[in-house]
Each structure stands twice: as structure tokens, then as C-alpha cells.
Length: 460
Ligand code: HEC
Image (cartoon, rainbow, N blue to C red):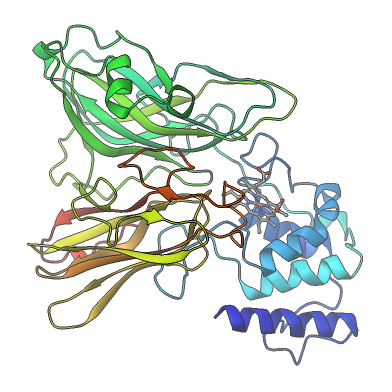
């Protein structure tokens, strides 16, 4: 596939350089003879890019006005042709997911032709309206908003990976259909993976006691020490129940609300959200104060089919094989395999690696020998680690083996290698530092019920 894309790229380049029409070119057919911003380019950008590339969006620059677009015309042609933008690392030819961001060949060819033909403005009356983007929540009006303790990113600071506690106390146990993380300063909040801590009411006196934020890398704390500093344990020192992956965030991703009766959460009277990873990007000359928050949408009904989760690989229910120890100047593939005991319906999958990851693939081998494709990421990108939601639930029958395979490159060829010269890197039994490695595959699922494979998970 990559080969094909490259070939097409070449042929388009050749055509546009010689100034020929695209009529005979298969990938660029029906391109207008004159491509302009208002008529052709703005619609592509507004449908695919401005959700992040607008003032206040998650990218550092906007692609809203003619001047914006013209300035980046060649860059836009390049990143779309190479399928770097819009960011969607999963291969759509392997499996398709809800909300996938894939640009059509025709749109890529438009951006390319526009860049190469002088980036013309076009008639003003053809200019489309910028879509209305939601403010404060991506999905509606929340019932409860819980602030994350504001965090000051000093000027010129490097990436930060914080462990953050967001405690809450409610008048009664309740239910929620969705929990949403809303970044304060979108251009520095890269991603969030968060769990929910659930206290038995009598076991915890003060949910607000303890620190709110631990910078794991700076403090070299073990996870257990960090949990204690955050005041997470019960009064008697034991640990409360932790529900995994309750709140996740990546730029451009909406909170996932499942069809009636599926998913949802039980919120205890006393609890906390625990962000395992609040990843802030680097800052330039200005310091930045981020005030993010969490929105909770209550539900009158209990979750009758709560979503469950298991995790293969580092810290998971099935080990990484061979061990995730990456010697300098080596490239190696690791696996994790888990045979499921009962029929399940998979909702989402989340591949996870750090900076040495190169590619990732996961599938299920059925007892009858067939393969069920789950996800393939041909070009791993640390910055874009989605929870990929299937368009319809995927039934995986009992006795199937779920296989995750990851390729790691610990050579100088890997431009993301944090060490030069390369060093020995391992998963350090679950350290979350970006410079240690990880190999994980998280699956959210329900026990299978007949008809599950027909239930759509698409957003309404
Ligand atoms: C989900 C959010 C998102 C979407 C959608 C998106 N971008 Fe980006 N884009 C980013 C982020 C984040 C960066 C990293 C640089 C930054 O922070 O500004 C980036 C970087 C870029 C760059 C600079 C690349 C570099 O190497 O410096 C270009 C050019 C670009 N995007 C164009 C586009 C175009 C064209 C589209 C639509 C076809 C698009 N982007 C869609 C978030 C997005």
C-alpha cells in the first residue's frame, strides 16, 4: 500500500510539473482546471484540519484564513500526501474505526495542485463558513465539572508526564453515561489516560488529603510511593478499587458515549479520578498555566452492561515475549498472547508503545484457524495513541488467541530514539517514563450477547 501511495505521488508530481490536465490520471481525476482557496481548499481544510488547526486549537498554527493556508500550502501538500496529517496512524485497509480521519485521494490532489499552481485566492463569495466548534465540552452540557489543579509549565520546559489526582465527593452514589477530559490549554495538553478510584464510603475519611500532582520523571518515585503521596490508600493503608481507562483524551477525539444500556459508570460518593499520564508538551519562551477540568454527564440508569477491560503485555495479564529488553543497535519484534476463555464483544483497542516503537499489529486467531483483524499501525507515532472504537462490536469466540506484535528499533536510524548513542532500554517493570519502553495492548469489551455484532458504536 505504501508503495502504491508513493507511486501515485510521483505520477501526480509529474503531471503537475508538465502542466497537464489530470483527466487521464486515475488518482487525480476530475480535478478542476484552476484550484482556488475559497472554492476547493478551504472546504478540505475546514472538514479535516481546523478542528485542531484554529486559534485555541491543539495545533500551534491555524489553517483558517487564506493567508494561513497560503503560508503552509507546500507543507500541507507534503504532510497529507505522506499521510502524516490528519493524524490517524491505524491502517484503514486493515480495520476501520469510528471517527477515523482519512483524507480522500481527491482532496490530497487538490491541496497538491493548489500549492503547485500559485495558491490562488478565488472568488470571495465562494468562501465557506468555518464550522462551529463546541466550547467547554465536545459533547453537550455536563452535570458536573471538576477542576484539575492548575499546573504551571515553566518557560522552556521539556515534555512532562504527570500523575494527577482529582478527588470528588458526591451527595450519593450515582451513575454517569460519560466522563470527559477537557484540556485548558489545548496546545500543550498532549494526552491523558485516566482511571477512577472508588472508595467504600466508610474506608476513607478525607479524599482531599494528599498531594494532587506527582511529576514521575522529576521525582523518580516508584508508583507505590507516588500513590501514597497522592493520599490514595484507604485509611487503613489498603488500596481502594481502581476502574481503568475511565477518562482518556487525545486532540480531536470526542468522549465515547455508547448506545443506551451499554457502558456507563457507577460513581461512588467518595472517589477520585487518577490521571496516570497527563502528558504536557514542551514550552517555548513563555510559561503557560493550564487549567483543565473533567466533565461528568450523569445518567438516571445504572450501567446494565458495564464495559470491562484487559491488558496484554507490560503489567498485563499476558507477558511480553521475549522480555522487553532492547539492546543498543538492535531491532526486534516482541509478542504478547492471551487466549480468551469466553465469547467477548470488543468495543475498543488501544496499542501502546513509547519512543522506540516502529509498528504494531494485533489480531485474534480463532480456534477454527481464521484470523480476526483488530488493528495495524504500520508507522508507530508516539503522539497519536488512540483508543480505536470499532464501528460495530467485534465478536471474538472463546478459545481464540489474541496476539499483539510490536516492532522496536533501538538504532540510530530511529529518529525518535531518545538516546544517542543508543542505550539499553527496557520496560523497567512498568515505569511510565517515555524513555523507558512499554508494550501494551488494551482491549475494552463486554461478555458476548447474541446480536452484539450488529450494534453500531458510531456517534449519533
Ligand atoms: C487531531 C488534530 C489535528 C488534525 C485533525 C490535523 N492536524 Fe496537523 N498537526 C496537529 C498537531 C498537534 C501538529 C504538531 C505541531 C503543532 O503542535 O502545531 C500538527 C502539525 C501539522 C503540520 C506541521 C508538520 C510539521 O512537521 O511541522 C502541518 C503542515 C499540518 N499539521 C497540516 C495539517 C493538515 C493539512 C490537516 C488536515 C488535512 C491537519 N494538519 C489535521 C494536529 C492536527
